[in-house]
Amino acid sequence: MAGRIVVPFGPQHPVLPEPIHLDLVLEDERVVEAIPSIGYVHRGLEKLVEKRDFKDFVYIAERICGICSFTHSVGYCKAIEAIMDLQVPERAQYLRTIWSEYSRLHSHLLWLGLYADAMGFENLFMNAWRIRETILDAMEETTGGRVIQGVCKVGGVRRDISDAKLKEMTAKLDSIGGEIEDLCHVFFDDASVKHRSVGVGMLSKEDAHKLGAVGPVAKGSGIALDLRQTGYSAYGSLDFKPIVETGCDCYSRCIVRAKELAQSVDLIKQAAANIPAGDIEVKVKGNPDGEYFSRVEQPRGECIHYVKANGSKNILRERVRTPSSANIPPLVKMLEGCQMADVPVIVLSIDPCIGCAER
Amino acid sequence: MGLFSMTKTVLKSLFKKPATIRYPAEPAKRFEGTRGQMEIDIDKCIFCGLCSKHCPADAITVNKNERTWSINRLWCICCNSCAENCNKDAIYQTNVYHAPIVAGETDVDVYQGKPVEEKPAAAEEKAA
Ligand code: SF4
Ligand code: SF4
Image (cartoon, rainbow over all chains, first blue to last red; front, side):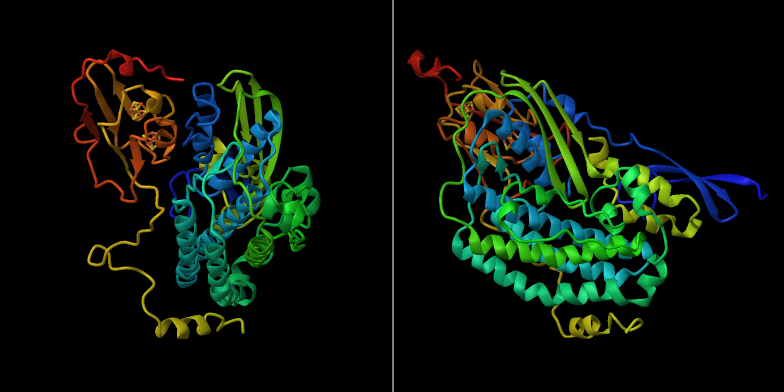
């Protein structure tokens, strides 16, 4: 038997957008075990809830993550609205859906770029990010922020999109549709992409289920787990099916995300076509009293916001379970038995967002 | 096919303008609704402190006795919460980002209100 060595991977590594540390136990070039450790970017945001007005905490909830920020605010607001029994106007629900899908587009395009970068496919990386820029522009124009939108609030949304602007946005999405298609085509068919990702980082359906994988990691292993099907915001009135791939490898996870781009574009168009007129917020009176478990689908998977309040303006406890923390055990499983050179691609394939995993 | 999947994109890109802006030679993109730095109309301010209570970043300090309103530009996250909570509409948001500054030296902007006129009732207005 070859001697074992331990190679530290991260927290600073060219391929990692965020700090996670992995101790890789190697036998020659083969990884026999990966031991993860996190704790480099803990900010104590959950504790801050005790010091802030529950309405002001939305801005902080949103800053848990720099990519799926909008969905965090939706999750938090949904919890408070359920506790306080607020009826959020339909138009606000649709606007939330539109912005959620915009964030999904931008998150997946960002990831596809980073994934290409992990494979060493630099021009594909730049190409994904060029398309992402138009998405960010649309978000900045409508919400005021590029990645931290800050438009969701307890009881509705803070800004409206005019119908003319919605038309313009869908027209813009149509015009970049071709570019997105070309981009996806590269991920689907390119020989180098396939070479680096087919059969790499296997995670069987049973393991994915047992280890609690969420989002594209679960979907890439054949589990149709998509929280949007629970019909929160306006998803209940839109027509879509979760995208599932059964390859169980990095390639499948990549395909799921690429296909979700087209799905998001479609959802935005559906929402823009059906959006009702009306108010965008309800008045919030009093303080929340009770607890609620809210689940929303982020670009990376299921995110849980648990809120407990006791009728004062500060909330007692807020607990966030982000998709990246759920996907770390499956990641450890995927890394077992892989080649050292595949580690960056596998780590990236779960779309690790450590900032939000640690909060 | 497998090997030439990028060719179409490459050919298209050859005849397109660059996707990037030559900043700072060209001005950066800016939208009307961009959430930029906060400004205050200090004459409207009654120093009630409501804005600083609702600031998630603790960026605002209001001193009622000295009649000053100050904001730490590096802490401010441009969320617009202070402007929404101000009953006197004294704070407003602009769509410009603040110029680069140094922590501990130029980061706090202090605004000095006019001295009090002899009308204590107005100053006594309570924070809700
Ligand atoms: S809330 Fe308005 S009036 Fe009160 S201190 Fe702040 S800026 Fe001044
Ligand atoms: S914009 Fe937000 S962070 Fe900045 S001073 Fe106002 S409340 Fe504080």
